[in-house]
Image (cartoon, rainbow, N blue to C red):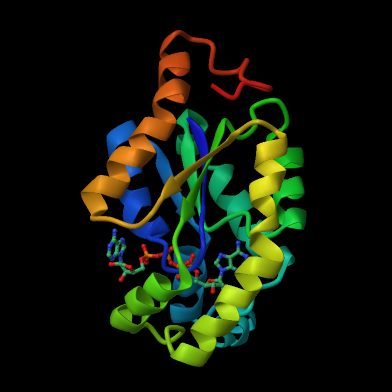
Length: 199
Ligand code: B4P
């Protein structure tokens, strides 16, 4: 399966991505994790990304696309992957589509959560980019740049939206439901002929 997990900051993308990947044998590609690792290793790319991350802004497309391409070129990604936190804007989504060609994204799961619960979760998480003013900026960036991807994937008939409020188990079950059609299609050996499907 080739999946995109979409959602506002703190919706639980990283939390659910680990479970989905374990359940379906997918490579987990989190641009947030890759960027944090680059910052921690103080690579040139990490130093360039740090300022944007600390402010809650998006890191440049050039940096993010370089990281994603490097990871997707590794042999294990050929068996299927889940993109967690990527794409984050229309330019990234279009670049991804161009890179993947015919073996494109098969399903985008959009996790829906209200701002109040997001604020509660992220303040409790307490990462460096989880201060109230930074979270507000991240929410604004999400609305302006990332939320348009809901319409982008809906237009391609690949979107399934799920309610991200509930226990981790409850949310996981909803995601599993959203993936069941893709999985049964792959099981029938017809995984490459899904364009236009919205079952
Ligand atoms: P990300 O790492 O993607 O982080 P996130 O959106 O804040 O978190 P996520 O939705 O994964 O939530 P989580 O599971 O942790 O991005 C960080 C930064 O990197 C961005 O701001 C940006 O600067 C940069 N970046 C990343 N990708 C980029 C891209 N493509 N382009 C440009 N820049 C990019 O869950 C949050 C908290 O909620 C956790 O504490 C968790 O335990 C809790 N939680 C999860 N599920 C829960 C549930 N069901 N109930 C209660 N709590 C729950």
